Length: 119
Image (cartoon, rainbow, N blue to C red; front, top):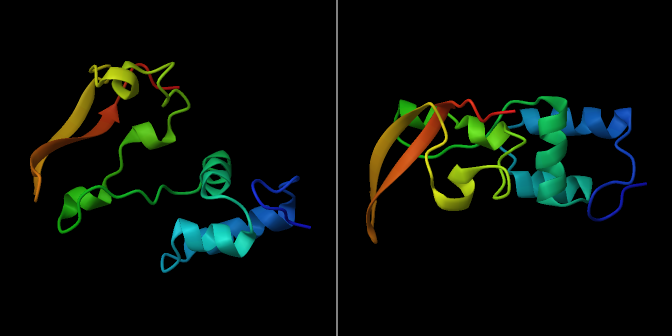
């Protein structure tokens, strides 16, 4: 039986269901969480544990959108263990930099590709 939040036990059937739903790119993470009756966070955590491909996209419209920062998969991606997350302090070794625009003005996006702080 599934419960709201994180399922009490991620058994083989639930993991297989997540793998199947994750492969359907027409479904958003919210859709998958709703189907599996758990939170978005539970889906992201289990996806990472199962090693499923990252779906995160930053900027659409070019090849840049198909690259995902390794930060999304890093276990140290939190304010306690990472200066980049905590203060925007550069701790990574290599990143792709792109200036994007919005109605609020231009901003810079960094897609981290190499980091010695990574776990």
